[in-house]
Each structure stands twice: as C-alpha cells, then as structure tokens.
Length: 115
Length: 114
Image: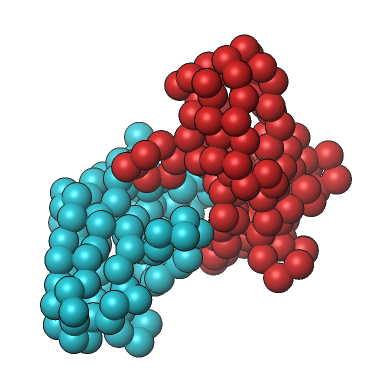
C-alpha cells in the first residue's frame, strides 16, 4: 500500500523569505501523480501544484516550485517570497495512474508566515 | 454552480442517529470523492465514484457508511447508527475523471456526534 509522510508538523517563515516543506512517499508503482494542496483556516482545500512522475522536470507555479526526486521518493515544496496569505495547512498527496484514482494524503504541515 | 457545494455546513446529531450529507459537484465532473478529515489530520479517503458507480469504496470504515450517486451528479453520504468517533469534517471533491484530473474540493460538512 502507498503511504505519504510529512515529517514537519509546523514550519515558520518570515514574510518575503523562502521556505521548503518536505514530503516523502512509498510506492511500488512507476506511474503516479503527486500534489500539494493548501487548506487555509476557512477549510476549503485548493490545489497548489502537481507533478507527473514520468516528467523529470520539476513543476513550477509562480512562487511555488517542487523538488521531485523519484529515486528517493521525495517531493518537497518550495515557496519563494512568502506572503501572509500563504499561511495555511499544506498537504502532500499521492495518486496512482493505474486502476483506482484514489488519493492518499499526508498528515499536513502548518505554515506560519511572520510579518 | 461555480464550485463544489456541500450541505449542511454543520450537523450536530446524537449517538445512534442516522445522518445524510450532500455533495453537489461541479457541473460536468464525472468523478466524485468523499473524504473524512479528523482534527489535525489529512483527508482520509472514503469512496470514489466514476459516474453513477462506486469505482473504489475501500475507504469506507464499516457497513454503517454508505454513499450513492444515482444520476451521476449529486452524491449523498449516509451514516447509520452514528458514533462519537464519526465526528469529523467530511469533504467532497469532484474532477473531470481523466488521468490528468484536478480535484476541486467543497467546503466540507462538520459532523458532531454527541
């Protein structure tokens, strides 16, 4: 069975600085997708960024980028020029590319942004 | 509607009662997911629909939990004989069902079992 681990329950970053959130996963599959979701205090989850496992190039979305290390099964999220609005819970998620499209989420990292 | 909606936003019930939680997905989305999120945890997969059928219900914790999606749009999560341990936020998400799909989440229903 696949698992997703986020070992940082909480992180803090100064406004305008850069922070990296860690995620590791375990799978025996070769084709899959990885995601980072943001959940602000209002509760609604939104997608931050997605990475297809077959792509070697790391995904980027504006200030958000990932460091995808397939062999190490590592998928970290880097947030540059942190803003107060980035404060939220961040969840890493895995989804297989075969069979079921079931998503597996990590336990989350709470990001605090300090003014 | 523009996004996924869930009703009610909050539900308080007594132990042993029956509850129904509703999810209205984004129009045209064929895939629909239900998750349960306990305090301080990530979403826990319950069930996934592709159209009207449950493609994967391996996350339903026991036979007190059941979900339907009779017309391939709105879905209802049904919980019988509720227990205090069922208290959580129940999240619904929908997607276009393709391999490259993106899930769009609703705001959730907070269920409290007294």
